[in-house]
Length: 154
Image 1 (tube, one colour):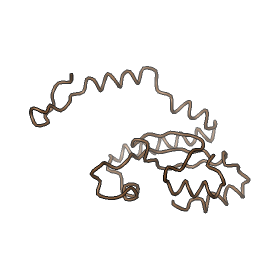
Image 2: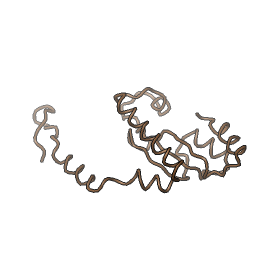
Image 3: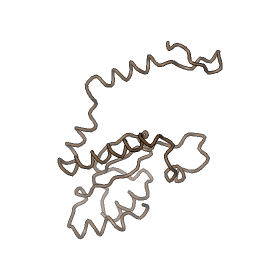
Image 4: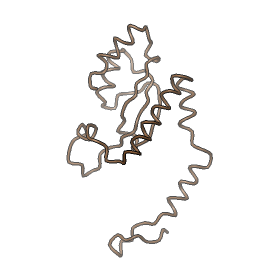
């Protein structure tokens, strides 16, 4: 992965593809687990594979499908590289659903372009944010007086 540009650069060159015609699907520490987002261009955020691709394409202005893996918890015993390389702790169904969302978004990018895919996949269903806020308000919170047992939400 760290030297992805060694394959992507020559492939794009042989196809006479401009950077914006290249689609890269990659993991992203800065997105929560399961989140899938698209964008064009940007920095590498320390991602060695993206750094390699940007160097070989001569630009960072390629299409990206970002798959959120989240950052390691504070008590994680390894470094960031160990976190990225380890197996997911999440249920297999959640991992499969995340990969399916990434596949569907990638297919949409290829069929309709990145702008259309972003509009389609980044848009929230009307009212979903309000429902999510309501759900969080209604969830029980730990009660410090009984050692962490579930208490009533305020």
